[in-house]
Amino acid sequence: MKRLLMMCIPLVTLTYAGGLGTFIDHAQKSNGQIKAKEITIKSKAQEVESAKSAYWPTLDVGGSYNTLNPSSIVQPGRTATVYASVHLELYDGGRKAAVLKAKSYAKEASFFEKEAFSKSVTLQIVQYYYTIKKLQANLHALKERSKELKAQIVRVKRFKLTGLATQEAVDKLQAVYDNNRYTMENVSLNIQTARENLRLLSGIDATHLGNSRFVTPHGVRFEWFDAIKIMRAQAKAVCENAKAIDANYLPQIGVSDTYHRSNFDDTTTLPPLPGLGGSDAFLVDHQNEVKLSLNMRLFDKGRMKHESEAVRLQKLALESELAHAKKEQLMHFKIAGKTLTTTRAKMKSAKSALRAAESTYKTIRKKFEAGLVDDIAYLDALAQKTLAEARYKETLYDYEIKKSLYYYYAGKDPREFVR
Image 1: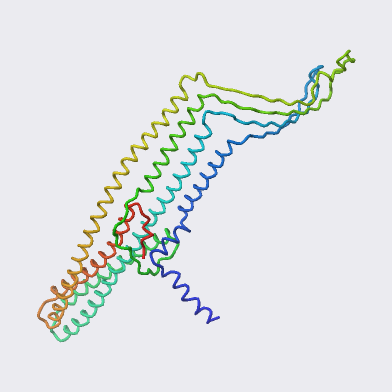
Image 2 (image 1 turned 135 degrees about the vertical axis):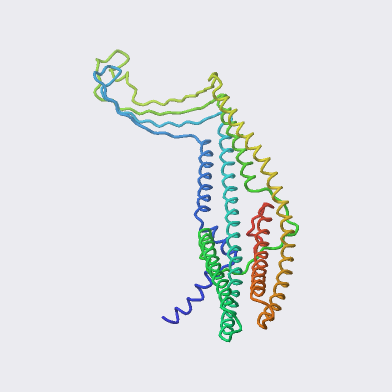
């Protein structure tokens, strides 16, 4: 049993030590909101199938039982009837075709909506993933600072015992140490908050994060957003809905065949008539009726015309939004490209600043321990080194976030470029 537990421990660890791609992939399978979008697509698919079925003839069956008092020669007291009716629309002005196209475009729009939402979830996961790593880098720097401060407090306390340092120097270091501990706790809380948000989106506990990065963009081909594709499909669907309304002004032609079978009881009888027989001759117990019908709307005071025009105006509104959305995406794509260049320059600057801060800190530390500089100079050098470390790490992770945004505004799925 103990051996089995030891074998399971590495598996549990691997489960939680996931890279960025693992979190994104798991979200696509487990995120409740993405699942809801997938169900919506299935719903739209059923609407398409329903529109296709409209081309087929309909078959209806039914029955009735009537009682009548008093009865007459042609109206028996009790009548039981069953029937079967087949109906087929021969011509409807293109209404069924327009409805089918509208439903197909609505299904297409729901697919693009799911894709757009999935990509937005991917972006959120990227944000939380690298935010955690930035905070962890910051926390690591703070812990290193805490260790250094603690060591210096012990050292200054020893000097105080020999009269080489004052209580004021000890108190200053202690105050900085306590404030650093508070900052560490605050950063830890922010890490836990980001982890919980990442778990909510992906369905995986973000206890340990792997090392993942995005491919550096090069020669990326621009594509339109899924949101723009949604509006295109919606505009097409609205156009087809307008056609379906206009079709009601055209002739509606149908053919039907209905077969009745009746049973009569409590009939009024008469003596047989020459050449006609008894009263049953007036009652037909079975009948087949074939009917060709034509219907055409001649006047409705413009009701359907206004309804069609209202739908067409919706299409114009969507097209206006579509044109603006295209301009907006192009703007964000250009800015995202410029941001990458700026961030690369920032990374170079942060790396130089870190080298300078580390060099200065080493020099000041030696002088402080030799008593050549005061505690203020030492604490300032330590703070600058800690800040430079955190900023450099943050810049590295910010660069990954900026790359994901660049791919997103290029119309791509950022997941494809995770390594």
